[in-house]
Picture 1 (cartoon, rainbow, N blue to C red):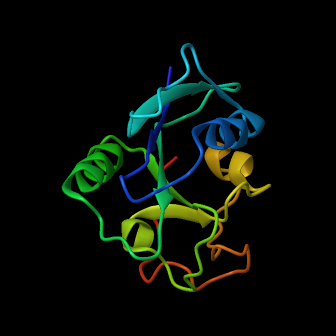
Picture 2: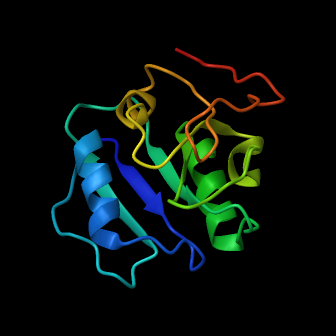
Length: 144
């Protein structure tokens, strides 16, 4: 069974219960709920996924950490998809460096599109307010 991995850096100050609600509303299912101090945790999804998915919580003033970069490379090399989700209160209008090269999508906080993006039904690039932003510079090749 393919899984969803969620990465939140030290700089991504988001209320854990609020984060879990957004993820559960999108279809994530947790065997045990993550603790406040966990930066990386996993969940199952309520439908079968064709590949693993990494969701990175994005902040506008943050570089990609080595830990995050390792998760990105691991996900992509196994054929998985990387999705960035802006945390509340961010204001960037650009693609985040975490999704700029290999990201499948970048969505706003609590985006109604999160579920469709996780399922691979759509590919969107939103700024924190939910408006469209420029897509990837390099086209994404999808193998089926």
